[in-house]
Image (cartoon, rainbow, N blue to C red):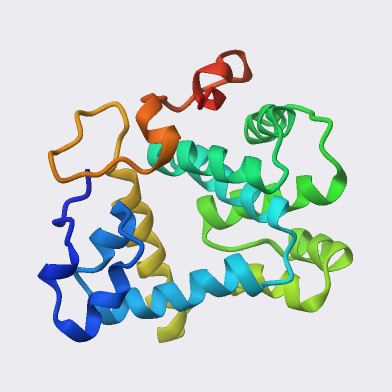
Length: 214
């Protein structure tokens, strides 16, 4: 579970209660900072509903981050969400192969997206080579999702440092939630993936343990 309390609408001032219309645990945790949640929600809603990035590619990128950070919470939920946007079991097997440095049958653009997600997670920057590959396969609007300072220069601006700190804090907060631990009484289930009690696979061999969300 998260290290901060899960809030409900009655815990917030009246002007912020609309933030918990979607009462899921990640939102309830972020509601401890209502103004921060409002800004976070605006960005996440744009990425999910208005961005020109293909939704299957988006979900593959999210799954790669969840896999690399060993976050059962992120992984299990986006296995289920990804299926709604065309992510197949074969895609998930291929993602794990790509993460492990093994060849896969994914199309070139999907491989590049996973490589970019991996670099952002491990290095907090997409390499110039990978970004060039993204630009070749995506238009400027979609590829700007991956923009970051070049790793060849030291990120020194206050804005980048703040974004990097927020990324680390968010990843840490998400990763503290584990489906293998007993849920607290006020931790509400979030969809079929949570109820299934699935864990995070370490190889394609035990894929069925995570993708089986009946």
